[in-house]
Image (cartoon, rainbow, N blue to C red; front, side, top):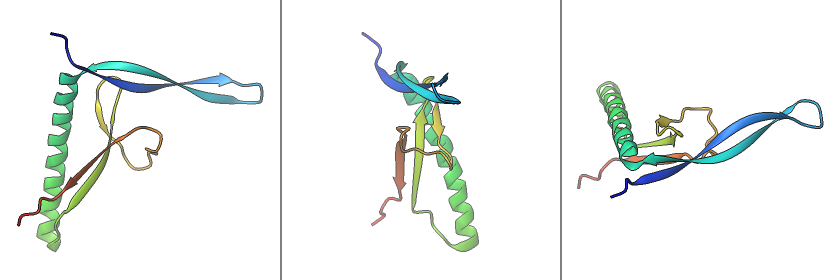
Length: 109
């Protein structure tokens, strides 16, 4: 039985000199095969870590102000090595192909 894989498209940046002054950046895309089992393990670890972080933040906010965390939206990137990375502020995700994870509080009715 063959191993399940996911193709991850990555970018390779290089600078080349142009006919005018200066350099310009050229981006080449390439695909990398990453075993699904590896991605599952890393995503699971990432989500557990994020869950701990936001659980603690929610507890502190509730104690001090009576507020409740209702929704969280994260942008995540998978590297060519299969690492799961949280994208921080100042990162333009428009062309990067980030995965958006949106967590909403369950309706307890």
